[in-house]
Structures are given as C-alpha cells and as structure tokens.
Image (cartoon, rainbow, N blue to C red; front, side):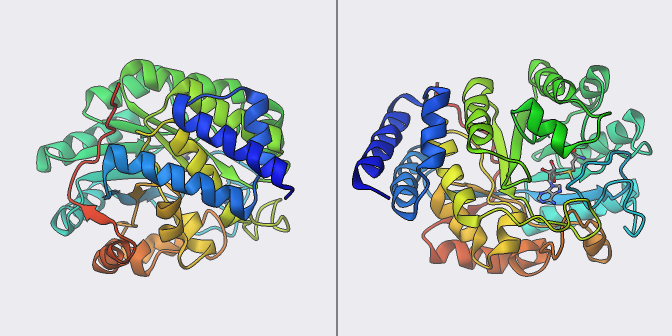
Length: 355
Ligand code: SAM
C-alpha cells in the first residue's frame, strides 16, 4: 500500500480513537485501506482502549445451543428449514438447567441460550427456563439469542429475568440483507426488533458476518456507522463460513485478518463494547480466539451444550466445538489467554459504560 494511503488510514484511526466517530465515507476509506500494516496499527490502538476499560480481563459466556429447529430459510445458514439433511434436536428445560449447573461449577456467570426460531420455545416455555436459571443462580446473567419475536414477547422474557439479547443485524445495508435472506424476512423488521430490545432495557448485541456473499466495503462501512449510532452493549462478528447444504455452499469464507481488523475498529468506535472472539474465528484459525483478543475483543463463548448435540448445531461446515471452544476445555482456554497476557475472570461481565 502506498505510504500516503497508509498514513491517511492511520490518521483516521487516531481520530476514531479520540472522538469515536467518523463519517460514513471515512469508514469506507478505512475498510478499503485494510492491509497488514494498517491492521497492526489499529490493533495497537484498540488494545490500549480495551485495557483502559477492562484491563486484561477476558469474560466468558457459557453458550447453550437449545434448538437446531428453525422456521427461517436464511441462505447462509446450515440450520435453514430447507436443509433436509440437518439433524434436528431440541433441549428440554431440565437439560438446559443441567448445563447451567455444570457451567456454574466451571466458573461461568453468564449463560447464553441460543437457537433457531423454534415454535416450541413459546414465551411461557422460555420464561419458565429463565426464571429457573435465575432462581438456581441468582448471581448469573442470562442472555437470549432466539431470533425475531414480538415486542410483547421480548418484554415477557425481560420481565422473567433475561438480562441481555443477541440479535445480529447481519448487515446494515437493506439491499445486501435482501440477497442473504428469503423475501419473507425483512431488514426493517430485524432493525425494529433491535430497537424494541433496547427500549425494553436489555443489554443488546447486534453483529454481522465478515465476507458474506455480496458484501461490499460500503456495506461494512454502514455496519460500522450503525454500531456507532445504535450504541449496542455487544457486537458479535465472525467470518462467514460456507455450509455444504446451503445455496452459498461454493462461496469463499470470510477472512480472519479482516475480521480482526474490524474488531479493532469496533473497539475504537466504543471502547466499552463487549466484543467476542467468536467460534467462527476459532474455526477458521486454530489461534483465532487469541488473534481476536489481540485485536481488541474481550469475550469468549465456549460451548456448554450437551456434547451429544454439539455437532448437530451446524451453522457452517467444520464448526469448532472441542478443545478451548468447549466449556470442559476451560483450563486450556485459561492457559492460552494467560500465554498472551490476559486473564479469564469469574464475573457476569456486564458492559462497563464509562459515560
Ligand atoms: N436464530 C437466531 C438469530 O437469528 O439471531 C440465533 C441463531 S443464528 C444461527 C446465529 C448467527 O449465526 C446468525 O446471526 C449468523 O450471523 C450466524 N451464522 C449463520 N450461518 C453462518 C455461516 N454460514 N457462517 C458464519 N456465521 C453464520
């Protein structure tokens, strides 16, 4: 990359670190300026910012994948309803509670219940599960990630005790959204869900895949601007990885390096963000978790689902669920984080807003 362009990118990064805001066109410039040198510069600034807010703490979340049934047909996802070869399962309330008990003893203080959009998980069912987890482990946070529901449903789940909700916006560009989803799913509805969740009082997480088909630099810039203006508590990003039984089977996977660069930019947009180094990052690169943390992430979400269902929650091919991706591998994860100068802590890991 020419020296001038590199210098301009570093100036933009310095400004972002100072004022936490850029024009949309400037975000696009930064996305286009992605190079090993610029990414290393952004990572250094991001790590400084993260240290200021969270020190060297890494928060862990126990991820429980409660159902692989899904009524949706997202073109990228292995759980899509058209995938007739997917093995479907649904955890019972007692299975989920048993996972939480195991997780609590391992040191988890946040449980994330994630699943496809499965009609069996009615408000009543999920509210009962949330209440039971809170009764058994009152010092823990419950995060839900169950897709699009009505405002009344989100309110009921919040009233039952859910603290956080993850709903990736997938892309801030409506045209791009339409190319990733069937016509019955709308970008406007997804965005309205995010607004409802925030209004109700959840700590809200949005997010997007990096390198999803048809993604442009302009779309990524729109994602960054959306995070800046929406001010979520969490942002989940990970590389797109193809699944063999979806229309995107032959599309290339997203880049680990670009994902790490975007993690750094997100950290500079909001130093207090809860930013996971995601499973998708760990799937494409054996050191993906560490690389994410060194780029500015501060959360890891090991898999706490019963071991016999883990391979059935197949969003993409070869999804990692062993070693430090697994809750039982926590000792290994701790060691790996310590080796890069970080510390896995026993903590709910709430967002630390400094303003
Ligand atoms: N159904 C819920 C929802 O829609 O939010 C939660 C489960 S959904 C499977 C969780 C996330 O997985 C999606 O938001 C999407 O970004 C990600 N995902 C799905 N397929 C993927 C793929 N092929 N590569 C990478 N990430 C993928």
